[in-house]
Image (tube, rainbow, N blue to C red):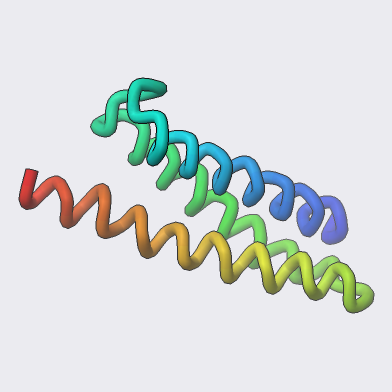
Amino acid sequence: MGSFLNIGSFLLMLVCVVWFLTQVFFEAYLPQSLGYPLIFGCVVFTFIIGVVGTIGVDNWKSAARTISTVLMTGALSIMLTFIVFIGALFG
């Protein structure tokens, strides 16, 4: 189960990054008031699953997947926090 969470969270992280970049470069895809909060929720869910997925670390490949998932979703959640919450204060 841990290795499934590890691989699943990594793949979901890749989907979240592509979704974020699509939203940034093609704003017509979803309105900003709807797109960024949805991405933020998905990133937070992926971060939690990534942390839980550390149970499935067996070798260096799974450790690299876990570290990259947690770091990328952490950085993305920080950026989206500023976009969603701080941007709402100034918008």
